[in-house]
Image 1 (tube, one colour):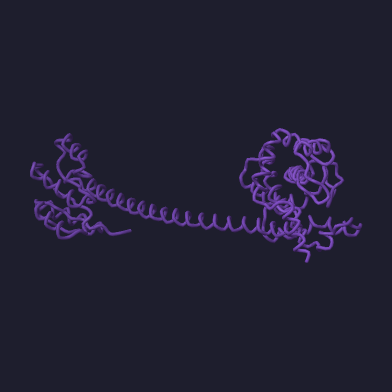
Image 2 (tube, one colour):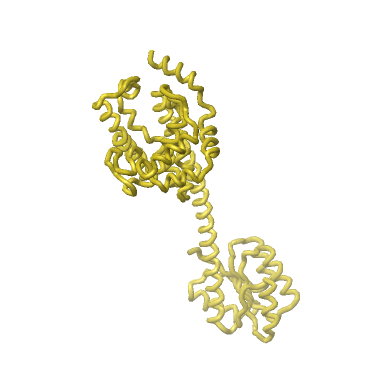
Length: 367
């Protein structure tokens, strides 16, 4: 607590002496002045006073003018005026005008002590409040800076994930863009299914982007084999969900992303892999992804066939409702017009090279 210096202004010698003795006994830091004019001069030379206790008997226009000048010189200065309360309306008027902070009877020592303590406490509170506001400003500034840094890291993180999956897609150029397209489908379908939480939607998008991350561990001789895979090779391919889940645990993705990576080959009827889950045992985000993945697969160009229409994709997805797909998710998919799904695909893949260019890329990569 800061010590407040109190200036006592009292023309009556006797009153000034007993007031000084009383206040000094209670550990106030006191200086004395015998007149208002002297007090003004001292205030102009010294700025360390924060509190004035002044006797005003009688109250005159001259003294009122002096009060006004005192407040003008130092508006933070507290004024406690001592005078006999024969005119309460005048006292109230002085307080309302902001010329004084307290008025006390000059012979009521407890009242004077209380007024001084109240002013000192008020100043302490003002200082604490200013310190608190400064701390808040710093916290706000730090928080803004931290949010900015977090957003930068988030952008770097998302870019890294997208680049990682683009690199994986490039291993099989015929499916280039698949991860990004199916990620957008999954995000839109999740919103239709009633998922509104932005963090959950972002985790679904990330999980869809990374759904095939486990294929990093599958040799090119199997992944890019042009002929039919052997039973042993299929077993290795079927390991990629578990391999991918093991990889993403190290980058601390949340459960929705992990669920898509681990369970994206489960089927609603329980005949999928790796765990043979069925119906609601399969996490909703993985059931959503299954429809999105099939939509992209059917409407994308493959070396062994041309791309099919979105109408054909809808027919195929509807036909496999309750077997491969969750019927509720199929309904969510069907609730959005096919031209909207086509537009999503166009917006996601419009900057990708044509299939002929991709074929050339594959030839170059094989040499």
